[in-house]
Image (cartoon, rainbow, N blue to C red):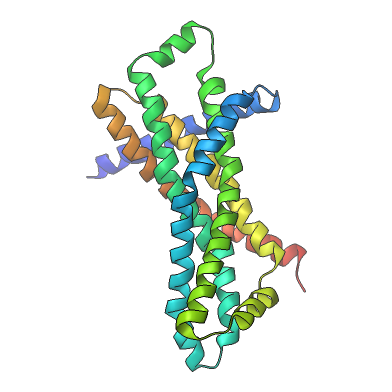
Length: 262
């Protein structure tokens, strides 16, 4: 049992190291401006536009559930004027960035792993090497950059939809007026709360793209291997997002306290 755990830890550390080296290699292409804009735009369309429906459902249900869970209790305590602000803070700081990243990891991360994994098992990656084309430049850079760019935009959309859903439930079910809900948001939510949440999604996007591509490149064993890579890419990406979220949240809080203390 102990040997198994040690082997798993060694494999994880090795994988993280290889992903870090892959990310550094991709960054070197990026700073030299060696990015195929056509591939980048195609990936941004696939990640952004095609994910809007899933992100909308996630954001809408989250905002509505938040109001359902806390609205009646806050009304009983005479604190209905705080409902909108609490919902806005919860969405902008944590729920919208994390849930959007998890949804995108499930949809986009798995698609990247499956696509590149299929290329790996059919020797298309080897063909790129034969043609002196870097798979990192051709496949990795556009996907990671597109994910990092589109995830904040999807998070903004999720925030807006979540607040709209929360406002609808507040008025229709909890009997909190729309004016009260809106004024609570305006008096509580600050620009730095939104920016802090969006900054985290850039890192989440890099994690999703890197893990998806890495698992694709490491695929072997035919169709079965593609399936395993797809599954493991989603699991690993979500794990890393949750772990990174803690450290990023601590960083954002410390930055706010340092530079924006009253």
